[in-house]
Length: 354
Image (cartoon, rainbow, N blue to C red):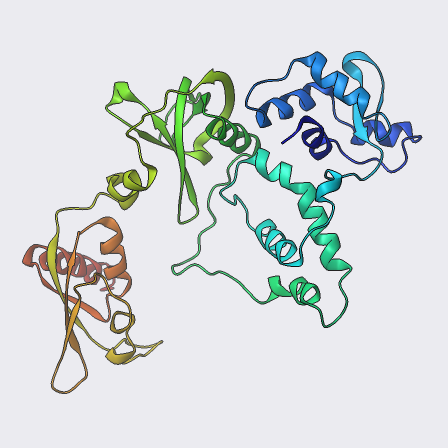
């Protein structure tokens, strides 16, 4: 983006510049402007360059106060350059849909840069006439919803400033320093990691992980974002691993898959589910969804149950899934997994015997 456009995207709009108190409350200091500008540019801009551009924008940019205490704002709601003032209806619908998501998979700086376009998209849809695509777009968010397939959990939140610093460092290939504390740590003090090179962010079912290049530790390492207590993007270039591929890493990293074991041939018998939610074997989810592309089903002669075979990697995730369906799934093979489930069933029976 051009410097003018970056400044327009970060400066807050003040409708009445004569109201000094309101302008001071909404305005932002130059240090924040400079930090945002440099997070958006390939090469950091000198302070004098940014100030000269602000002076050129005097017809629609103003400030209250002087020197370091000045608070800057824009006096007309010029959210984008004139060539971008019109926004397509389809784009408006897409942008408003994007705005519904938390941690959209985009850096904070990028989302901040999109805010002017989001404002235009909302205005475009609000002004739409009945019977038009834009009017239909206003109601689209009420027609589409995503649900979790398992028991929904309230995950620990990621600090907004931490996410901003991490995503900015990742976007611009810069090093990152951060404080990290595991819940099992006895000390109240987080461990400090200085000048680490971020490689990617993984969203695993709502839990966010930062992948960091750690050659001294034998390769990439995972850090839970919600456990990072503070972070700072540095002005030093990150050390990129030319051989690193995030998709390949995610597919192989055992910690992300809860430590899978070697592949086995899994054999299950699927029965009807018991009360209070009775379902026949034919209605069982594994009659429609597959554990592996080679999955095969063999129905019993009475059609009240079926046997299933599939190639799987036993893992914590697989065990949780099978236990979650324990009233309707019987593990037949491998024998070691069957005995593991039988032992757990005996333990549960003992606990519920009273």
